[in-house]
Image 1 (cartoon, rainbow, N blue to C red):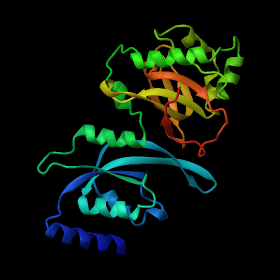
Image 2 (image 1 turned 90 degrees about the horizontal axis):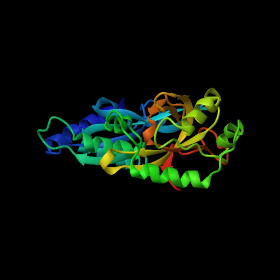
Image 3 (image 1 turned 90 degrees about the vertical axis):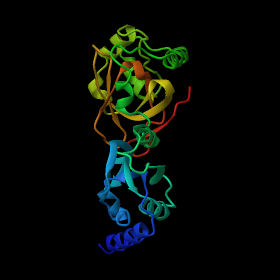
Image 4 (image 1 turned 180 degrees about the vertical axis):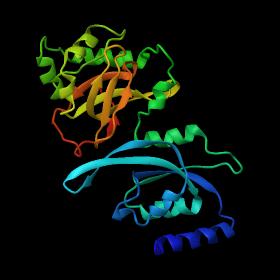
Length: 268
């Protein structure tokens, strides 16, 4: 409480000096409820813009619980304080653009750009593709490289090789096809026991990039080819449409939840 009181006084003084501008701030470790959040808890009073996104997992007792990230609109003074307080952990908060005085709110593109810095794939990306969307040239080219790199087994060995990273499942360029049938025949309910890598196309269609997401597969929809994917850290599953997927494979080192990054740039 003392921290909040001091900050409120400082905010009032900053406003009196004309420092009443606002800017966007990406905050990870959300919600701010742990002991380490005492100096940042005051940020919870400010308005959130955009969705809450996965940010891996954090230690909780003997296990791991989901960690999240959000974008807030905060006074510039509060943003500077948050940055200064977390200077030894540069991923904790990230400054975004200033808000235009008198505007109704921030530009959605600025909000989404900040959120993608925390987690590159956002469901809104695919929503903008429209019905009947097909893979882009970037995705089909990446798929071709992956197909050439792996020669898949002919039986249930697919499952065994997939989960340990010896084999990559690459979707059909025109769904459904042989790859769709292969996935449909796998014991998908067992895949949730393994840390897997989902290589996907992220961003809006005019500026997409490829990323590798770590997590578990929770479901597969044969009709649409969509994959239910739970980001590492135990997050709720998100639905990834097949036209956005380059490949699915296991991690060669069989790393567990809490030991893998939430995501990383795609490498062929």
